[in-house]
Image (cartoon, rainbow, N blue to C red; front, side, top):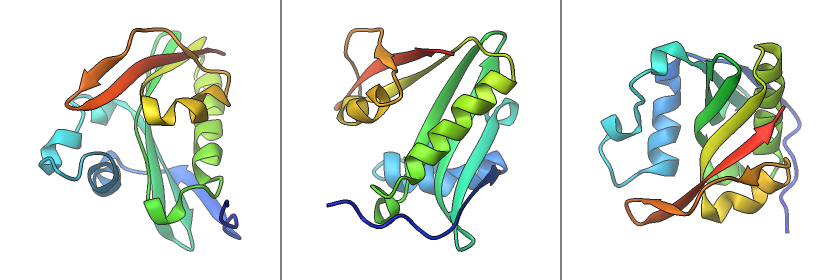
Amino acid sequence: MKSKQPDSVAIQPIAYEQTYPLRHSVLWPDKPLDYVKVDNDSDGYHFGAFVDKQLVAVISLFVDGSTARFRKFATDPAFQHRGIGTMLLTHVINESCRLGAASLWCDARLDAADFYRRFAMQTVSEVFYKGPIPYAKFSLTL
């Protein structure tokens, strides 16, 4: 059963350093904090979803010409299944278009594949692994 959507969700730009705690605790809690940092974090666009001023989800967007990629998409488990991730990814899709991208892609954990398919993203690679976790590349033509 899905939880009730929060009354107020604010999506706004954040500093890349603000993404680290959620990236770490949600995606790779068993790794050191440096594991969740991306070499070019300072070149990206970073967005957070806030509920009652609490940062509950993060995503990072990197645009290279007509291609955009999002990375390190993480939502606090206490706030999952409430539509917050959907709002955040919709924001990133719109932002990618605004920045002139013609396509958007990500490396997605296979356990999240159905979520990405709801956005018409398609698998465009074979399965690969990051540690024990299976991934595939998903892409969307904008």
